[in-house]
Amino acid sequence: MKRWLVIWLVLLGISAILARYFDLGAPADWPGPARLATAMFLVPGGVTWLGLFWHPFGAGPTRIGLAFMALVNSVIWSIAAYILLKVVSWLRRRLPTPGGA
Image (spheres, rainbow, N blue to C red):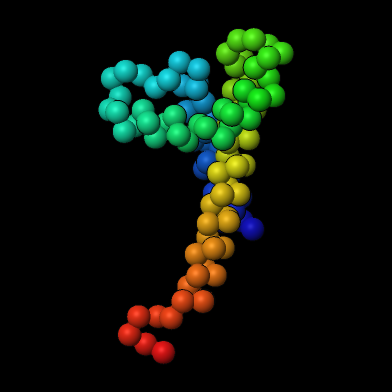
């Protein structure tokens, strides 16, 4: 359980740092792959924020909106990582090992 808390805290920190780039995008001097990775990383929290709050506020996210986005983003990515690791461990148990019994 401690390991997942640490993973979530790391994802929360990354989400909080990158959330400010949600509305206007990453700086133009960043390389294209870094800009794309930032945008793709923010999709879960950003889509949730847009669905819940865009129409009531009609503008970009406030500080509270960015905090909400970072929280949701980190939770969704943590759940995705947990599911991915469970699927990989299940596949490892089910598939035969190469060259062995």
